[in-house]
Length: 562
Image (tube, rainbow, N blue to C red; front, side):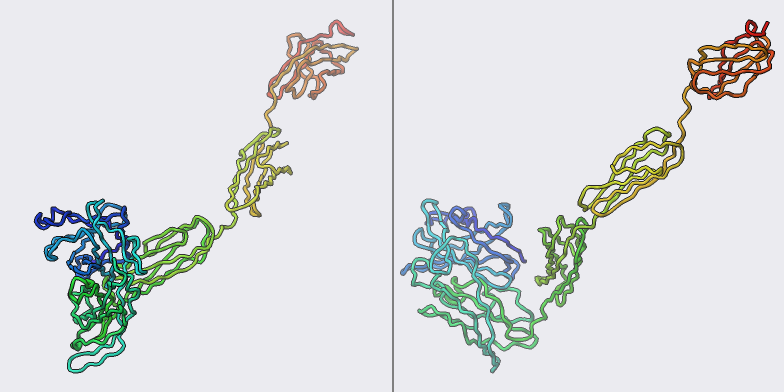
């Protein structure tokens, strides 16, 4: 079972009294060890914790160091478990249920070294903590950690790796294989001390081996037999090489070797050996083909601002378990995606470096590229609002609107009204002089780009004015056989023509004795020649079809009329 841990926070190592029989603690003085952030107790571990057995444990060991007369050893199994304390954080505690094996409780004075041995994906790591009894806390105070530079520092160091072995040569004689191995020497040994600068905590390494039908699945030292031990001696110097023997690799099987680290003069199998070995090295047989993951990805070389950029990826896995690939996209602007073929819309222009990491069965590959986000070209769209009809002589309101995207500048307008008239404002008015159908258009221009809207408007003649006809006066005068009729108008709005009418009787009937006389001026006179009629009137014909007649005048008292 693998668990990915971003931060392993040692917030508390509890000696829970309710888990331990009361008699066990009769002489211990306290039932709890305290490790918390207030005293600097924090250990950061990055990686995947896996001891190869599926139990997900971190092995913890403790012993007294720096006291000439006393060296006690014991074992703790440290269990980690996710708690709802903070994101990616873990409570870690130790069960001292086997404290009786030690023969005594941890002392309340002096210094106790705690070794945490961690299997990180098969590459073992270790970290050392110093604990001292604190009366202020009525418990144990983990306030320092060895840091490899000769001093004790704040309890925030990362674990140290166990070196991997390199096979230099090998020979097989009589069923045994002789191995010549080297590794990177462990340095700064005297930095790992508690109270005595001259005392080295790391005092040797053990070469262990594994034989089986396949690669190892457990990295616990207990599952790897010892092939040889290298003691650093009094000088504390790591030689970085060893010659050991392992059984010859049987047919169809494989042999691996790996290092474990020994502390405080301990021997392999004791409480002062790391609980896990370092990275394994194949020295016999053929390793199964490694899982290989290859991938490629594509993205647009350029995209317009506001448009979605489409990304795609392909993955090929060889010699891998049947797992599902995981995708981790980064688009270069802080945005991410876990889809295989995502799309992404950038909020700003610029050049963005994108990448994708594909992971399957612990193997990863990556692909990357660059996408340029550019400003789209200037686009202009216009529309106009114009009535479909109008009346000649009446002002018509024209209006235009324009939508410009990614353009600079102020819109300009060019109107034509179809009768020779033009305008250059957004919302003009125009008066047509006569009836007809006129084709209008407006062109809006922004940033060098234009858009035109057009249409037609039908202009009709204005309706005739209301008819208003009234006579001011009318007279008739006779001379011999001619009669002159004179009249004036007080109102002649809507008069289409006048007609002089005559009759021999005052009551009519009257008939026309003149042609149609066009209106104009308000005063009129018409002479009738050679007429015997004695009664006259004027009829005004209106543009609306109406007829208004004047009063009747007579010539009996004038001229020759008797």
